[in-house]
Image (tube, rainbow over the protein chains, first blue to last red):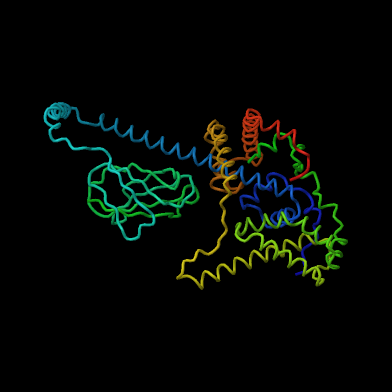
Length: 216
Length: 226
């Protein structure tokens, strides 16, 4: 049990600098630095207090940066959707404009009689529901709420996969109060679909949750 | 990043000046302390406990989570005290390093035990104890409040500056990697971080002043370290 390392007592007695403590909190200290910091903090209450404050500050910084990234991702999604919609207008062949207008006129006259309700269908999925598979309607926009996530508030990457495992849609969404709410595009093919949640940042490879539902 | 209250007036908060001050522990007479513990003196035991209890508690909590923390701290002290009494610590001035060795071995033993238990109970899903990184509700509230304050400051940074912070704090990339990939010198990297921290501190100060918290805190602080 005797400590046989060289006696660098002076290093242990000095309060470490802010950068050193920050590296310690972020698990980035090298071996030698770790030895000095760990030994020091075991006997220094004021540095423990500094570390506790630093942990809170780093957690707050992470949260703020995540929130900014989430908002940026949402903004870029909206912008991309807008661009796509404008582009489709400009790429439409001119000759089809006349046909298009005619179709609109016809639509105004006829379609109201056959109009179907195109509001989003509500789908609630639960993490702990055993074998029960929720159902969603075909060719309708879906408002999906993922419940009982048991995940902290923050952001997750969401992927929609078909029964072949092909990725149909992806987005970054916020986790709030143990829930994630999603607006999925219309699904045009019947079958079983999966929604997978992944971490953001360095955790993008970590699958956190998976939900299944059937489109009929 | 920056602790807003401490950055207001370091002397008032009892914060050490990093790299300059020596910890109070530098005045400890290690030989006398070890002799007292060896002799079973209550005074010696009390001093040993005062010296190391907060540090050991913090270290064990960081490594193993808050579950059964008091028991673990107690076990660690028992091991240290018994080892001293047996004469395992031959050079008293190495007590700090000795305690670190004991604590690290304790952590390794708890982890090994948890892994073993998990192996034996794979079918039962009993919820093996792992480090619980979650903060308590009060800390969560503080983190959220600070995050809201920080958001506007972070948004005001240039995308490149913000990318540096994202890499360091969110992706936890080492400083060397960030500097290499973004063609930054170490000084530029430090400067950016310290500028951001200063802004957070400024915002926090304003907020605290507006809430009247700062003035109360400064008035009532007795200058003792935490």
